[in-house]
Image (cartoon, rainbow, N blue to C red; front, side, top):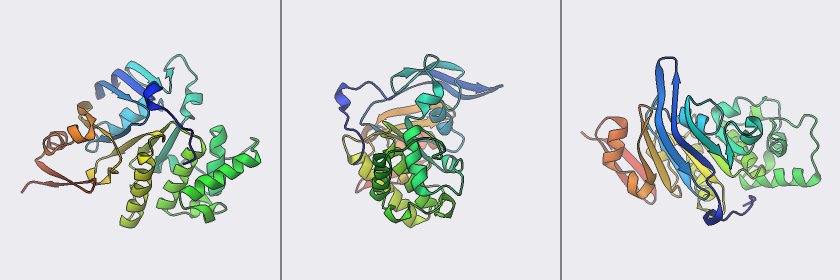
Length: 271
């Protein structure tokens, strides 16, 4: 792996929210959420559509504003740090983030521009080492021959791998994956989940937060889960203890059976 080695035992949380609430007009999106992500942890935020998953993570990573609560991110406290500067230290992999990238930018430039927290190389200076690191990051994601391809010419799965390479390039201590399998076929999904699993299995790798509403999309190496329903956390903690048929049923509001085989989850409705 290309990232800087970390020692989870000696590091402060990478993300912390305390008594977080979000409301827009009369609508309450999140209510009194407290959540801490420590180095070395790989979290799944799991819930139904509209439950508040993406709102929680966007606010926790300073891409949206809270209505109440205390937030810290990578050692910085919201309101006491440069928001734009801190946000560049977080790696994002999502369809929404991919849509921000101009289609004509090459895959290599998407990756190397992470050095300055930009979406293109623009006027920034890049060293030979920067370009070599970008190439190595692409190679780690099996994209070695794609550096000169334009981002717009890549498949959905290839774009997600480029964004993962970008996160590795930036040495991001936290990678946020917002439904990264959306739009992928079965092969593309399994390829991406395999790469996320390998990244998560590395004890010195970055913390990860994966947003999904499908238990089968949870990589085996992920360690924790936060279950959310109607803007409230219904359960959170180590995945082996928290994610059960009962907790999943409560989260989705219907009776579900959950099974885990070879590290992967499968869920289905009771008949």
